[in-house]
Amino acid sequence: METKERAQAYLGGGCFWCMEAVFEMVPGVIDVTNGYAGGTTPQPTYQAVCTGKTGHAEVVRITYDPEQISYAELLDIFFTSHDPTTENRQGADVGPQYRSIILYQTEEEATIARQKIQEHQAYWHRPIVTEVVPLTTFWEAEEYHQDYYRNHPYNSYCQFVISPKVEKIKSHALLRQKDMIHQKHIQ
Image 1 (cartoon, rainbow, N blue to C red):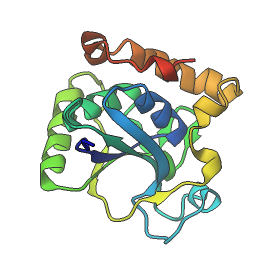
Image 2: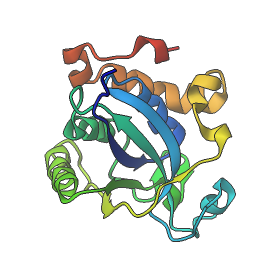
Image 3: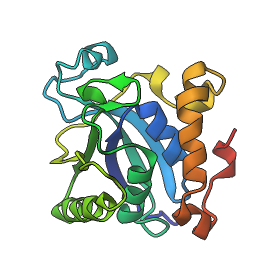
């Protein structure tokens, strides 16, 4: 049995439910797991992270096949899916846990992230404030946070916040060009 190569990317762009719903549509993405990273408190809980005192951001761990989609392409989708110019917030979600953050594992990833920030700055009137920091530890979020959009598509937050992000990404040029939307994840 042939095993496909897998890689992981760690990104935070506001609520992890939003990021998860966006990246689950992308072919080449094998799995998306919600969690916490970038902080100092070991084994953080959602309640602790929500205080803004643990230093963690809500992030997703994206497991992907680099033969189908590159790290750079994932970052293009990341920068399209949220506002990287708002510090410690995305829409009504406010606090350091909602900051824009890229957690890299290698210097190559850090270099690509910084290049993508420079490229995407041309699309924004305000400076991009996305942090680019090394990944230390990823803490998986509680089970009820996993597959949230898929499990609760009619929840008001899903309808009014997540669904518009999903629709925006469906029209992303990269995905249209490659006809790359996972239809099974679209409600």
